Image (cartoon, rainbow, N blue to C red; front, side, top):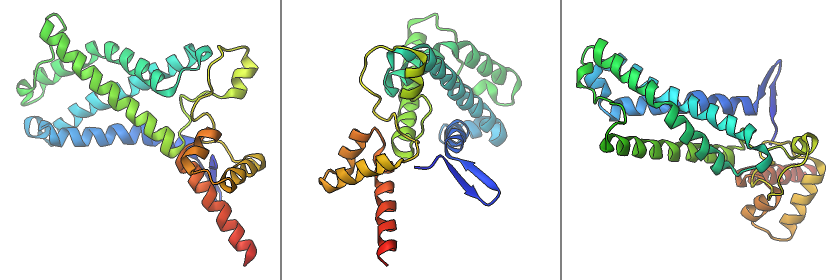
Length: 236
């Protein structure tokens, strides 16, 4: 799966496009959905509801991204799987966001028309409030992990994935199994195409091929289709 696609003088870098979709598109979609489904537009008005929920969507999303990136770098020698890194990052972000969401909620309750109708986010000084924060953090962690996993496995998003060549250059690492999708987003070499052809000739299904080649199932299917199309053009 190519990392760059050229349109004349324009050049599209796949991973940067996926970054934009993940860090801008996903929280924007979540904000719009939550503002409508959660009734915030009815409480704060269309603009106020969208603005309030955008704050509750973008800040946690970006904070989770930053915390996961720190975990990715700080725990590099252990080469943790993607799900472990995202759980660590989202869990850490949830703790850091407690004062931020508290202040945001307090500002809207104080200054925005209809804000007093919002549920007050009090400090975690009671057991009920601690339980409420824990449930919210658990849902946020599950959502963050799910989106990271879907982007990595279906779209070949390589952020938070470890590069074996860079690891070897930086020194010894803890002996752990290779990442399930460590080749996601990388260009297909001639050697990789030959290996793919051998797996196809042996009758392996795309899922099994993806596991052996450390790529996503979608990337394997697309590459097989491209090779078959090129072979048909040569025959014609």
